[in-house]
Image 1 (tube, rainbow, N blue to C red):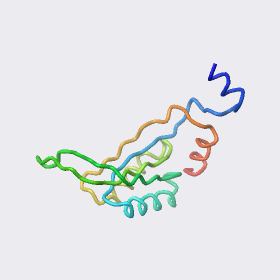
Image 2 (image 1 turned 180 degrees about the horizontal axis):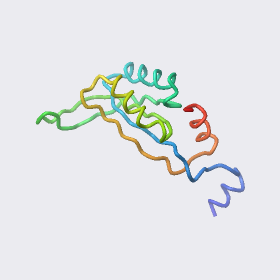
Image 3 (image 1 turned 30 degrees about the vertical axis):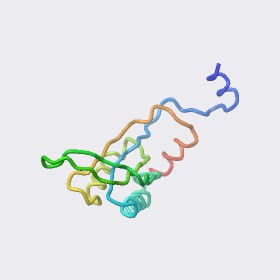
Amino acid sequence: MIGALTAAVAPGYTAPVTDALLVFTTLPSPDKAAEIARILVEEGLVACGNVLPAVRSIYKWEGKVEDENEVMLLLKTRAEHLERLKLRILELHPYEVPEVLAIPVESGYRAYLEWIAAETR
């Protein structure tokens, strides 16, 4: 019922098959996250970068448990750009071993997904 209602109210609302990706990386500060996001947007590797300022990361590094305040940078791109994007993040990132994780987008608002595609050509 809800699916039929959504389709009736907003045809073309969702796109079930997409090559969009969400790519995550953590950084030490909002300024560094914004700097990297701006570079990646300007270079056309990502359509958008969201800086999420309050992330607490607990992890083991070199045998010691660390507890750090970090910033999450959420990037929107397409699968064809992933390898170049990973390399560029590694060039720009201050960490020795940065988190770079990509998650496929299974479905989403068609117009937004088309915008991601248009901005990352």
